[in-house]
Length: 144
Ligand SMILES: [Zn+2]
Image 1 (cartoon, rainbow, N blue to C red):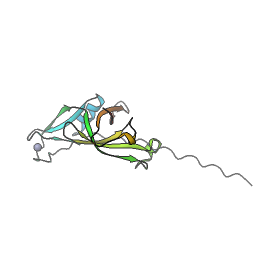
Image 2 (tube, rainbow, N blue to C red; image 1 turned 30 degrees about the horizontal axis):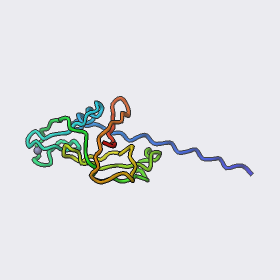
Image 3 (cartoon, rainbow, N blue to C red; image 1 turned 60 degrees about the vertical axis):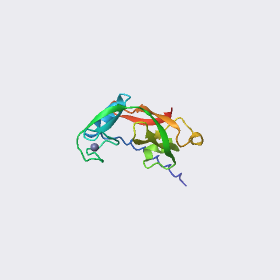
């Protein structure tokens, strides 16, 4: 009778990474510099996030980026127990928050350094920055 070989652990998949576009490059460049850059319509002045080519309010294709404050309030959150991508399985469970930024846009990103039992809707949080490689820095939220 021979022993059954133990199967090798499946490889951990690569971390999914953003692919900056012409419209989103200033946003990603800002994160790398520790700045929260938001797209403003050149025609009607309204702010929008995520970056995209056309203003959803007036359909203008002209825009510029301006630095925005990094604070906001928790709109809601979820605790991810079963990540959509197996790369994140090692971090589960983790919190992803939807935050109403002071600049007037809503952003979702991981929330770190806080326990779910301590979270409240309307709680103040701030943006933080995780350098992943030389080009990409990802946002996350932490206690304000
Ligand atoms: Zn507009």
